Image (cartoon, rainbow over all chains, first blue to last red; front, top):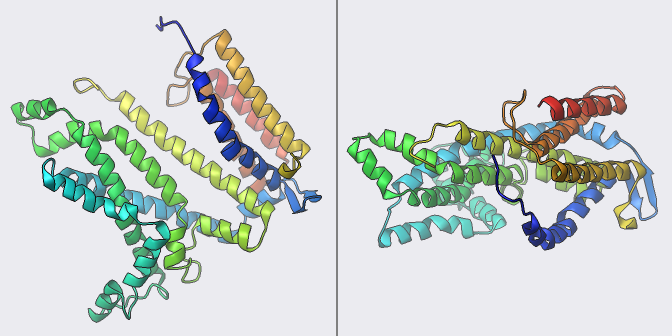
Length: 295
Length: 90
């Protein structure tokens, strides 16, 4: 059905980027693959180990536990941040100085560097001087994130929601702003309820930004490092040790380059799989839907 | 190149990937792909199926290496077969 004359010369414009990516990503990734099958002790002292590192990594109980923690963390924060972000975007003022003021207020947490976010929350939750820690203790709540794993989890999730829901809200806000007024007029003529407007106009129009929001939030939460590292250091015990922290301990702390290379590759494959599944599902959901007055 | 600590198996691995990509490019030029729906739940192009095949091959290998004592060659054979099935009927 495609009657256009194919002209792929535009791809040449991508070449400089390809060269850059080759040096920043592809060649390092190849090196990681090479490291993952060897025991590298020095420039001229390498021993081929085959699949040994992969076997030991996959069967390491500590890494398996970190993996499960990581998955639960990502799912929990997606389940909170995506609906919350949509909700915030829906109630944000649409025009006037209020719109700008709210936008600036909402963006503030995004401007704070990750390890500073960790420090802020570390102080905020301290029982002796922190507003939240002290306040909870005065209210009679036995809250201590260095001793209680549940408290540590709640705090990390709260921190992430505080830090990153604004991103989801901003993306949804821009998506909502791009819906032409005619859709709302049509809805008013049909006397559509608020819910119907949301379900059949706003949500479908938000699909594209939601793909980006879900992907960004998933990838970042799956690689989260600085915030929990500063806030809890992975503790108490190892209850908040996520994958990237385990990887750093292996690669930098213990200099186990082979096993950590194998670990990185597995980590990479999981991220690749999940991102692809998210992307494909959301894109297909959009394709299968009957069109509501054009896309 | 010595800092990349190449080994024969990894060199063979990357050469085959590169050969596949080059082959797919030539194939695409000779007869452009048409998106179609096979046994997979989504409509795919040839490149999509290759990607799905390679990604599942990676997980097949990980599963065999990590949780069975089977030879890695069995994983390779299964993956190759799966890739062919996927390319033809997926």
